[in-house]
Length: 460
Image (cartoon, rainbow, N blue to C red):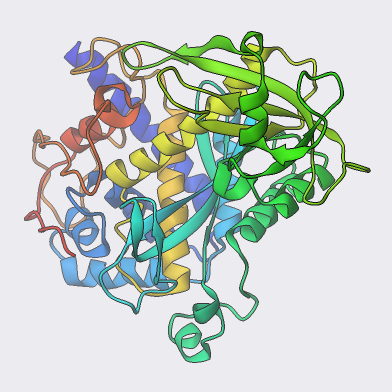
């Protein structure tokens, strides 16, 4: 079995080299190719934080200072296009995902990065999802595409508060492009969706949580792009029940409407297998007209989906959907619940490839680092089903490979591979780790690399 795993990693190394070669074709100058490869290897191979200095140490241990400057310039200053790299990632990875079925959903969400100081681009006292409270942080809006097999982030944009957007001195210091103006998070999301539509990304139902879905301009914008959505909404959103729905035909909050529904309107539905048990809850659906004003003239019918978990005193979640009204109840719930994939993406991206570990302060570096994290993550997705089922700590749900085998940092001797300990976790839980697809991939990669550097402590 050891020989089988070794062969898998060796084959993965060849695929990794080809993958990086494809990415290099869209970043411009040929002298960026080596920096690109080193940065991608560093994101997978460095232990602890994936900031530039530890990555320099693992990719060029004999010339750390020089390598540090080269990688820093590549990520923070080189004028290559994030959009072109992400498009190339999409071109390579989406066909692998679609072998298991067409893209089903587009998922809009945001992710946050707590910061101690106030000088990094976009840092603002705002809600930080990672901490669950208001805090000093950066927030990036993302768009991912997914089916039931896998998901891939395809767009990444830092949110700038009004204060940041109008502060010319800070913008100049952080190299924020002049074209970047203040936009709300829903406006950024709609821009990402429009760009994906124009780029010919395989279509899917657009999913939002309530912080985005409650924005009627965003929902209307998605409909104007001829896309369907299942949008989480807050309990206070006003609707008018369509005739013959068993509820009064008057304008009321979705919570009020949910509480008027008869007992027979509620069904217990199982939508997928969880880590330890089947996931099920009670749901009702009602045809409604969602309108910000009194009356419903001109407002199309939508489906209001309501979840009322067992043991709860009142309904717990609400969605508005523009999917066909004849869609099966279970399928509607299944689609609404597919947002779980983006939460796992964020966990993997932060824990395994260091999405939140960039320590530079500028706009270009923030986005370049995110793009390269997405690129590495995309490669891991494309490598699914290459790790043998009986590989160390592997379960049937963990199927991604690791690369590259036999990579030797420049300037280093060529010793036999030395096993490495697991990556230190940074601001994330290990709950359910054995069921995350990269839980085997990254440790196997790390074990295939020679250790030639002193581990760096985590920085604040």
